[in-house]
Amino acid sequence: MARNVLARHPVVRPEPKSIKHLVQMAVDEAGDQISHKYRGKDGIVEVTFKEFQKDIYHLGTALVDMGLESGHIACAGENSYNWITVFVTALQSKGVFCPIDKDLPDDDLVNIINHGDDDIIFCDKKREEAFKRIRDRIERVKYFICFDREEDENEFLSFGKLMARGKELYENGDKRFEEIENEDKQKLKMLIYTSGTTGLAKGVMLSEHNILSLVHWGIQLTTLRDVALSVLPYHHCYESITGLLVAIHLKATLCINDSLKRVVKNMALYKPSYMYVVPALLEVVYRRMIASIEEKGKTKKVQTGIKLSRFLRAIGIDKRREIFAELHAAFGGRLVKIICGGAPLRAEIVEFFDDIGIIVTNGYGITECSPLVAVNTDFDNDPKTVGYPMGCIDVRIAEPNEDGEGEICVKGDIVMLGYYKNEQATKDVFTEDGYFCTGDYGKLTKKGQIMITGRKKNIIILGNGKNIYPEELEEYIGNIPYVLENIVYADRNEDGREENLAVQCVLDPEYLKSGDIAELQAKLKHDVFAALEKLPTYKQVNNVIIRETPFVKTTTNKIRRAKDGSPM
Image (cartoon, rainbow, N blue to C red; front, top):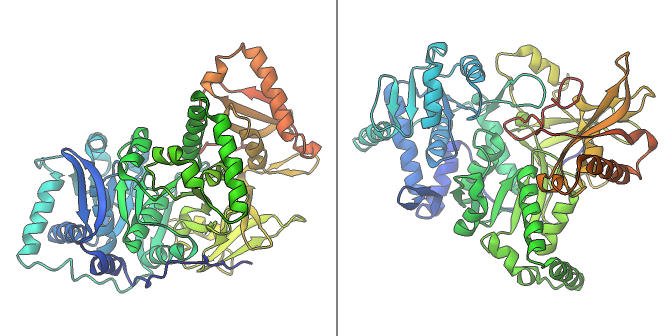
């Protein structure tokens, strides 16, 4: 069992008593500072904390006037300031906020909207078209509030007109929404449907207490700065809770990235000091940086700089930001920290960014835990682990084997209430003494950091009784420069038993042009064997395959596996 180790210099902030109090603290302490920046039609728009709170009150007042302040309030769309306004307004209401994955197909939209009992849906233009297609299949929904619509059309209403109505009511003395105080912090407040790599989506129920605990304890374990670039999808609580709400608590300026294609350009524009990413995104940035360095013929110069900076740091002198000023300029010149989560991260990437003066801390989370369970600290950053557990939880390794590996189980303030309208699924993931079973396998280091070794559902049990976590082998194979993605799985014999290991690899398209397929296949096989040569014999891969099509992904860019663990 492990408790966390707090950051050496944690951010000392009063614990918010409610979401309303969270916003009010920011207004009281930094009301005229910029809370949000985003690209508008006529340039960059800046919103202060005072203005943000007023927008919340205006929207909330309009919802009260419609009789929907206690309903299930859903939102589907691209990242935007309007999305954030709906999010925080719903959290302050008497109702429940239901973020919807913006990329779901129609049938999945129907299923989660109906199952989630949504009463009103906020959306952008693209999603409005989808909702019109499925309108007759989602009868409970009363209104669709469209961010891009100028005029009302039946139940499809203009967001702008709704805000104007709320503002008019509020300024004329209607304080019904402003005066809402939610006494029971343990009630359902946010309903998030998972997009797991296996199985059907389930509705994760989070309370206001869960959310506030994550926001408060999260900043005790890591150090964040003054300007964030917000990149990841808002319908995932990694970005919405850990990103959007934590930024409010820190009084940081949150800059909204409007396109993944413009991430680097927006970094130069907004000059962030920190950002949240997933490994897939950081991998792309890393590969592009290395490719750019090679194209400019500066590989040797960078390598020499790294050797010099390491020597200077060893004697207490840190000149990384000066030595690698050109690289920092590409990120806006102020980037200090990148927090990465959602999947394993290669240690090589962490080490490279550390060498040039940017901290990359890997963390571990799951939606059912609001979502952060653990994260590495700035002063004790071990990329082989996912860091120290949050201060408000206990972590237990269930039924550990001889190496100390077992299922990671969590108990504490950030653990969900359960799955919505699914008592059996809830019962299946909780122990009798209240621990949530994550389905992830791992162990604890001597320092108390969590080391992830694999997914319970992905474990391969060979005919000889040996247990193999494919993620371990995938990390080794992923270090081959031209391998973009790979999945390790078991080849089965005629009886269906798992006998040998196989791997499918997606290769860099540019690399595929460098030779014929037979030569590339032979080289890949050689490099895979070399990558795994130090591992035991039973962990060696027998069958190496070049995959011609991309892996099937979830909307969080995780590779989907079939029930037998093989790629889909």
